[in-house]
Image (cartoon, rainbow over all chains, first blue to last red; front, top):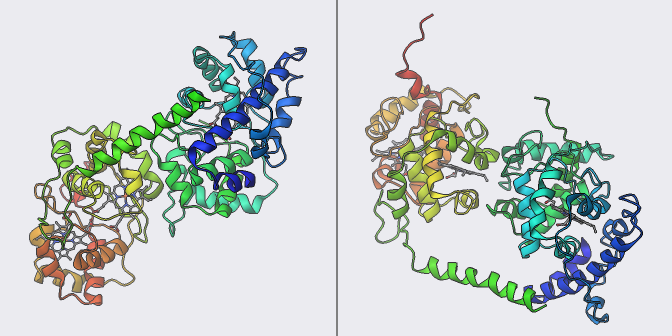
Length: 261
Length: 240
């Protein structure tokens, strides 16, 4: 995430969006190439987009300023019109896995997220209320009429469990998740997201989520880069947290398992 | 590119509109400032008092409060977060609307209770829910039992005229319940009300506690924290 902070601080909002748009267009053409590759099913796709998404520090996203100097991207980005769900899923599967349990640390698991939440995120990517160098370049290809079925599909998949190799950090995170941080008035995450992280229709599921993705989101809420939280409370919460506390709570979230009913 | 730019402009416009709106909105007056009248109704409070709160909806809306006040509204024993269960709906509505209006100052909580985190009708729902909810955990008490001295101070200084003989408050007049509240919270609020830092002090209460020493505050807080939840007093005894 460092590259983002470094550049974003130096630009005002408009410039930023313009840059994001340029970078976005590059990605669109990149992913379109990926898509037009011989379609040997979902297995083939992971390579390209995965490499794109895997490491923000090193991925082509990083040298954003160069993007503006690059030759104008081919305007092959025109939306290809609505696609049937099974075909569209191949695009998503490359980054989010066919069952929505992304194995790429930067990409969120979509499996088991609430259908309304998923729908809203897709709409927000489309409208620009939520931006991401990667998703903002994917979403122009997807017709709004497809969102409902996509959201429905991913909401019905079973969320896989995650694991940590940093148990001490996760233990510190558990304290924050369950009790909050009294000194800096950070409310306990469990209050809204439930103790097992299973969430509700208003608060997204967190259990098993990839920790790198969770760190990125909290960092973006903290910086105000992500501001599509309808109650605006996530920005407040994240602003009250240190980087270390964010890392800890994200590590714990990964280890959470949904309670048996 | 043009669409992206116009989208950004479109995003900025409503922002300006809200700023403009906030400027000609109702101006709250805080204790100590000229024109402060205790219990002066804000337009929002008038609106909320007309509503009938739905405790079921209130329980769901309270989800956004549980991170601090806890799932059973017991708050935390040290009193950083007060116990809210059993408080009169009228008091809860007064406090919440005054916090939103900037009359009672509570920066830690404000972002979680102001619009858009909580809608106006959810205030009525939450108040109805909290008034009836039962806290499962015990409240925080003082370090030593000083309730005898505390009771005397409470009586001699006529605190009961507003807060009731059993610390049960007064729903009609929006005087808060004090019984079974956390010791730490009672200690802090007395000081905040006395200095005016809370923003919505009752001038007569300020007079009543003006001569309290630190140990007087400790004794009264301890006494109040050890009083039973007033709702158990008029509860019909269970038939075995």
